[in-house]
Length: 303
Image (cartoon, rainbow, N blue to C red):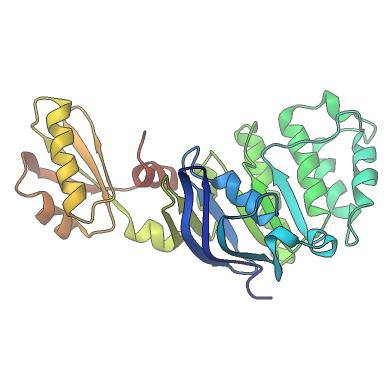
């Protein structure tokens, strides 16, 4: 199956608050997708729709060939879900967690689970209740990957993890995917780690706007330019910024004390032409490099 997830003209809203407006995209087999956006734009809602916990107002969503709101037990068996937190039964030991969970998955591979939890250097009799958040995350990841699912959905996989455990989580996930041609859809509030392993990104914005990019193409074509300004007040600068954004292909402008950051897919010469008649220090106009985290903030705005 080339496209494990297909979304067509998906619309959803909570009363008068639109979440998606005609979202259409296909998630290709074997790729890792990062779903990005500020709080409240519908990242978790999308996960709920994919899993059939919510039925969209209109449009279609199919997962592994079935409507998402009517997934069979056989299809759910092929989906590994991490939903918002690394939850596990605290009264279980490591060994008990593996034995209990293995009963529900026909393709279970206990070696995958123990290969990961052995890195914790804890006895199998160690209770989950006595683990740190990072240690629990490794147990949960082991339980997810041992399912050998065709589709992994990881909602806010980084919650509660420090930099070391995030790195271990990602490294092991990448190792696993080299041998298993699974599709991964993930969300996270920590963006900087995604740059090293995500293939495509899906931006969700308030009001139902969405945009889908291959990550390398996005990083190559989305730019940040800085230029000094001479406005006396923040409001004067804000008024000028709004005129630029409304009239031209500028995604976002952030105002600082004496300079602006301009984010756009336009090349430098085109942006220079757009802003050339404003009260700006064009002698200092320049492009600055960005990480994915920088680009995410520039694309979605700081506030």
